[in-house]
Length: 68
Image (cartoon, rainbow, N blue to C red):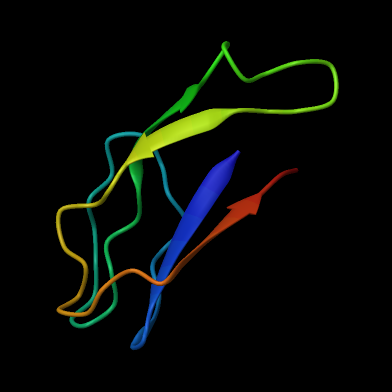
């Protein structure tokens, strides 16, 4: 799974563990994606992540989770 953070300036890059690349005003991608076994079941996937180092000078307003 990968996560994209969104603020009023646009979308972050798609997250990769340990990545903190970014573009001015666009938020950094979330980091440290992990499964949350307390939530995960046969029909639900629970994930946790840490915010990227920069929100691009605007609050994060959305996260989109991508699944291949």
